[in-house]
Image (cartoon, rainbow, N blue to C red; front, top):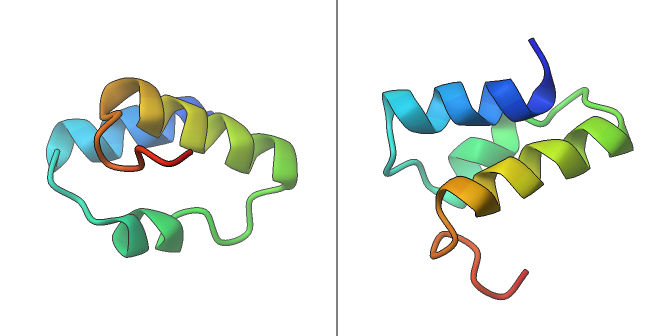
Length: 52
């Protein structure tokens, strides 16, 4: 599963996940995948991390 699909699946299952819960899912990802993950999180829920 790609990083962006992982983010989409996590937020589809639980749209109220906190940043620290999402951060736990990025453990072991390379920098590129982590960037894609957070880009998808921001796309799905821009209010979750408004400063980014």
